[in-house]
Length: 301
Image (cartoon, rainbow, N blue to C red; front, side, top):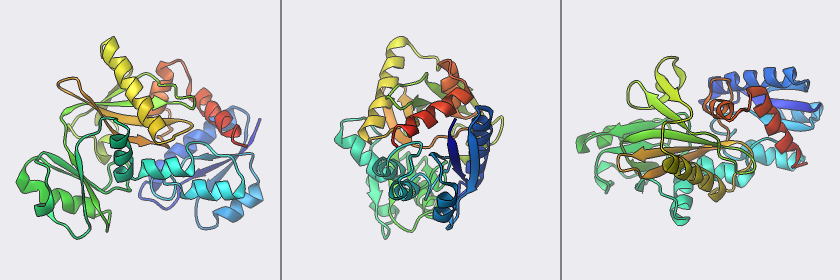
């Protein structure tokens, strides 16, 4: 059994989500017999980790400073093995603009997009509505606005800018089925989860309000589409250099085209989160999944 520090909470806008993830992970690890110390991350983190001297660090942080390579960089400096992706892969995946540029360069289908500079407004948008405006460095659909018509583009940009002072990602809004592909450390794609939000938009409320979204796993798709979507999810994971458990979000349009939206390098880890749902469909229990993530992290030591 291992001596593990679980990092949770933190300073991002997704703090509350992280506390839930961290709590579920701690419970599972203790049930599995590990010696676990919970760490609510703040500026004293280096001192806390030095005191604990863990064999493995389980990162259960979401959003900035947890998913963007910052904590990963600290752990690299301290020589502590940790769950999830490397500094570089974490930084690429967290930045929606950089990750889409990588996808485009690798020939991975991603919705058409444009980067709107910090001083540019709606009149600089070249793509036609419907569009999505996104703050590049936020998760959980924070800092997102949708423009179904040209006259709404300014409002969508303003919604995104509530969470950023810099550039905004403008992305073509593609109507289709929302799918997510969990990928484990060896590049193994798990059964696909289909996400059907009651409102039609998978925003923060739809993600975290019970009953607002229906999840189907495995997704009801023909065999060819299933394999194609899973392969695309694994390709996006590999293109960013990810390791450990991650999740690729994909849209399947009415013509059967699959489009990668993003890769989440620290997926939610409660028993009802998407990655654990996919793992369960593959016969992997929540406790087994958590232990597998720890084992993969230990290989970095």
